[in-house]
Every structure is written in C-alpha cells, then in structure tokens.
Image (cartoon, rainbow, N blue to C red; front, side, top):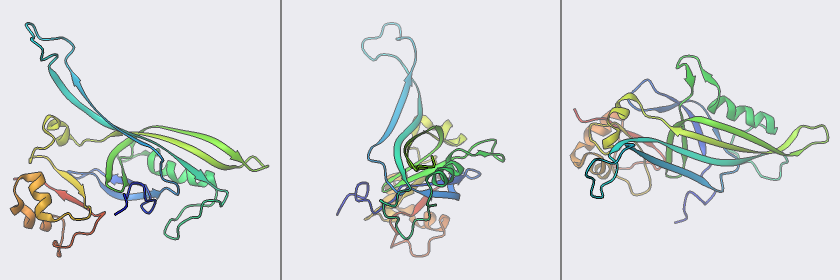
Length: 230
C-alpha cells in the first residue's frame, strides 16, 4: 500500500477548531492545499532545570516540563494553470485570493477567543493542533501587470494544549487525559481503547461518546475523541 504522506492523493488540510470543549474540534473554515509540502518538520522539546543537582553522579539536570511541539512546512500556490486542480478542491484561481483564503484560516484574529485561531493540520496520519507563529510569503512569478502567478508560503505552528492537557503534560499517556485520534487502516475501537486506556472494554463507552452506531467499521481519516476515565 502506498504511503499516504507521499502518494499525493491526500491533500494537506488546515481547519479552524472549536476549543470550548475538552479537545479542539474542527468546526469552522478550512483550506486544502493544491500542492502538498515536499518536506515537513515536526519538533518536540523538553526543558530541564538550569543547575546540575549537588552530588550528581551522571543523571544531569532535573526535568522541568515538556514544551509545546512545533510544525514547519512550505507550500506553493500556483495560478498558472500548470498544476491541475482536483474536482473536490475549492480553491480560487488567483494566487492572491488563495493566500487570502489561507490567511482567513491561520492568521485572522478571533474576537471571541481574543487570540489567533487554533487550527488542525491534517495530512495522512498527521493530525497536529496548534496556532500560527509565522507566515512568510515569497512571490516567484508575476503577470506583466504585476499580479502574482506563483508564491511560496512558509508556515510555522506551535502546538496547542488545553488547560487540562497542560496540567498533565508530564504524563502524556495518562488515561486521565483527553485524546483525539485520527483513524487509520486496520484500527478498531477495542484496539484504540487498549492503546489509550490499557483496557479494550471501554469501546462501548467511547462509541457512545462519539455517537457511533457501527463501531466495527471505522472509516480511515475519522477523528475520534477518547474522554478521560471517570
């Protein structure tokens, strides 16, 4: 089976999320890229105390906390018509309009939340939740009128954690933490429950929580939410 991250059949999609619940949920505007990134960088970092404990025999500085992950990638916006647009992709024809559509999702200030939108970046098996930290555009081709025909956009995101996740960040596998999982081929609800809770018997509760009626046939690409154990 070809890798979904490189097959080109799955377009990278960025969606505005609702953060009023325990987990961010895609619920607003979205944009799917015409040209997927050729490279993508996902970084995770931890922070340690500044001083080595007295009498240290090799353990080093004490662990402090886990920092939010970061996601960086570049994509090309094309208005020349050279790159065919899939029938299911609703993108404006002009490059500037395409960039404005992306800007509306990742950069526009959210007055209700008093901060930029939390977004989901979904591509194949990757489901990253975060907020934009930088958005740089390089225009590389123009019409005689000066209107851009091609542009390269470089985007960086910082991972998002709700207050509960931030409190439990030192134990990210805790069953007391809400989880969002994007279903892939071969996943079953009992198997996912075993991975997250260590007990497959919670599949009935998870199915009810997600409003599933036919939980034996999970559709790849579906996002399921696994609530904390009560």
